[in-house]
Image (cartoon, rainbow, N blue to C red; front, side, top):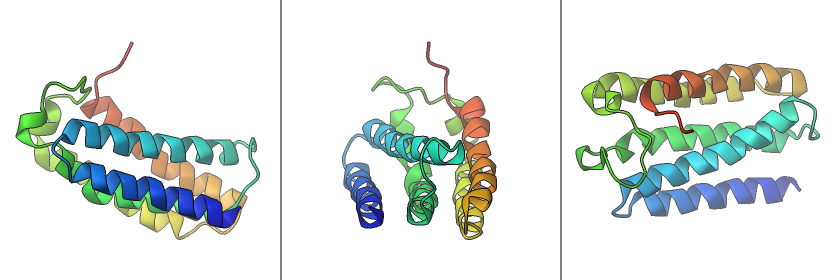
Length: 146
């Protein structure tokens, strides 16, 4: 099971990397966040006790966040402000430095907090800390969907 979880996370991130190099940055960032959302869902189930704690899976979740953060800010070129059913808000382009810093913080927090995980209790604390980045970034840089 551990090998499957790590392989699935690696495959998903590999798929993202190929997509990110393509010509459609909106599709690439959507795919990236889809992968992040899947990892977050798995983490939330573990944190709530709805799934058994698995250290390898927990580490894979934080690694996926760190890897996504490494390229995510580059998926917002100026020509991708509209179209593709994007939910990206203009604040990304009007304050690029703050957006890039928010994404970098997410990656750094994933690395730092993920390194602390040894059991369920440390996972819950680290997961809560890292996912705070999601809400704060979405609040400023992502339009709400109905």
